[in-house]
Image 1: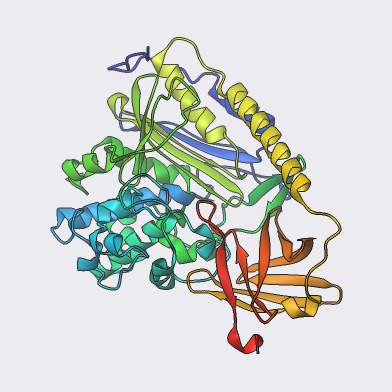
Image 2 (image 1 turned 120 degrees about the horizontal axis):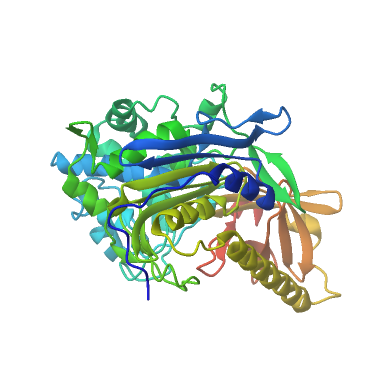
Length: 489
């Protein structure tokens, strides 16, 4: 049975916390981390660990700025909530009442989707992240492209995380408030909280003296990678901040929306944001965390019977997490500069173990076991794909015939070119090679990152190359890109 949460916190022992963090950085090959812990409205720890810049051996400090990725989403729902408090927006009125041009692939969802649906990920539309991850499309273009991106589930039938719907939330804020999302967030949230080290764009990082570089691990070695711009999807994940700034954001939520005596948002609206709205489907691998739900910009789940409100973030070179337990007046923010590492979650759960008492679970060992199982599964899948390859086949046409422009109304353009004996593909910002797999199927391989996908060319009744299909969204069949007509003639 889950342990009942402690009503008033026991003593929080952080005497070995520094050593614990440093050990996690070594064990998980992570350059650096910044951590802040807030309790009863006071910062009890704010520290940097490790390096923000390995080449120059620069340390992480509490003022080091990191991209916080999807931890941004709660700033967007806070802005929506402020507009709700002012009577300018209703969580449950159709989005089209505020954005008449809003259109999804499903006409029923188009007419009925509300701001609440956008914010709790229940539109029926899966992520479709490749519309923005490799492109320079701006927020307005991305919202316009939603009509060409099919759903994978019925409207409101289930939770499906979707960054594009938060991009839509940002445009909605602009339409209702008359200010840009950045202006509204700055004036209504950042300035009142004194968050002077917080910004919105990757270009802003170059202007800051204390900023973390981005790292990924490949073959056991760390390598620096370029920052990933989120300028097109700003409201879903573009904020850059430090743990000293994020401490003020954390205090606001623990204080039920108040900054001192002033309420920036009503307690009622904030409680609605922190409440579960849609169940996040399992499996739930750990008995201490038996279920999970999503609110409005927040994940909501118990840990050993203790209610937590959290959100994680991840983008090229960074993994982040914010978590708080309202009943204990306790929370933390962890920012790290390496992709895909579990240290933010390890530190969070370790903190709660310290106040709940009893056995401290070795979360690092659990996550290592999960990592080994995932790596084993990935190897098995690679072997299966290799076995499915039909050897000894050739493309049906000379390589020059595959060169051309291939278009999809939602995803954009894939340009295929031939150079010598090789084919290359460019999808907006993505540069890739096309390596023959079998028949008219090729492996599209990112030349800068360890990523690939299979694309298959189609032949029409006249024997001409008429298009290609590519698995742009894992929850759906491959998307079809039609070859530009002038190139078929």
